Every structure is written in C-alpha cells, then in structure tokens.
Image 1: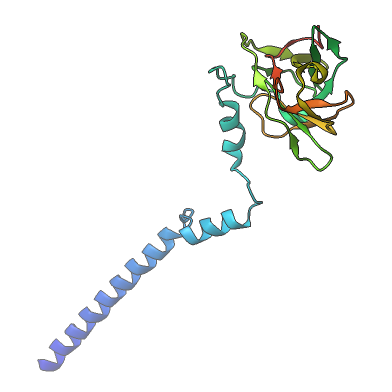
Image 2: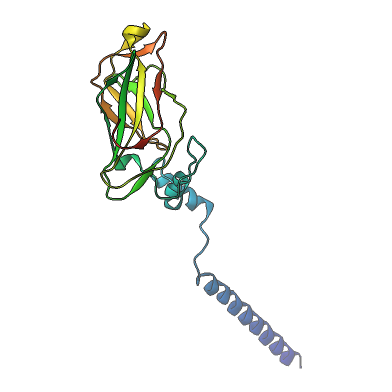
Length: 216
C-alpha cells in the first residue's frame, strides 16, 4: 500500500512539473511574437550615434514650418522658402537726401513655389567673418506674404545715412550676410559699395519688410 501511494505521489509531482514547464515555454514564445520595447540604454545609443544636432525627421520640418514670424503670423507648413532654396544679391545704390539706399534681393532658385514673410536679417562682416556695427533696425511696415514661383524675387530696402554727412565712424565690409525670414543659415553677398557706418552719430542701418520684385 505504501509503495502504491509513493508511486502515485511521484506521478503527481512529475505531472505538475510538466504543466509548469509548458506554461513557462508558452510565456517565452508569446514574448517573441511582437516587437520588444526599446530599452532606455538602446535609445541613448541611438541619439549618441546620430549626427550632432540632428532632429528626428518627423519634427525637423514641421517645427520650423510652424515658427511664428516677427509680426506674429504663422506660415502654412511646408510653404516657407528655405535658405538653400534662395540666392541673395544687393542691387544698385539709390542715393537720397543724405541717404544711401539699396535693394536686398532674394530669388527663388528651387523648383518649387515657396513664400517669404516679414523682414530678412542682415549683417555687415569683415574678411574674418566678424560683424561690423550693430544689427539693422526694422522700419515699421505692414508685412504680407510674398509668393515666389521658381525664379521669382522679393526685396527689402536697406538704408543708412551717408557717413560723410552723419560723421559716423566707418569700416569697409567684405560681405553682407542676408538671412531669410525664420531661417538660421545666411547667404553671403560680397559688398562692393564702400564704407558703411559702424559707430557714432547716425550710424544705424535700417531694413524694410520684404515685397515682391527686385527693387524700386
């Protein structure tokens, strides 16, 4: 009798172990059926291995395209002209009463239609890239969206008082850096119009809003 009970007990233990083993096997197979969550360590490696300053592709364009302009307006996503899609030039000086006036022209060199809105950025720089004088001031105006088909242009007026009249200290720039609205990268335009005011009386440089065309 004792031997029979022992055999039955041993059989029950073996059966229970078999069931537990089957359940453990099912759990392992189920975990491999779908993608496992990425661990924090693997996420850190992905960021570290990416190019410096890189932004995930789903955010790179949309965030910038929603950037609000200086006048408080937001362009439609995907329409804004990017620096790489533009060329820049400085037109012929239009002298005024003690003033020097230049059109700063941005031209769409891409194959798509894009838009500009507001003021460009501008800075005079020397041959080493150092800025000469302060950032230009913005002349009050009413910004409007300028739509540029491929080959189309927009311009903003750049003006300052003639140094001979104002008595401002001058320097001769190597280039004018022009930054399209809401962009960070600039376009370098060689400066061939001589000395500009950089400090002293009436040394301010002014910029107008962009408007269609290549100048007055």
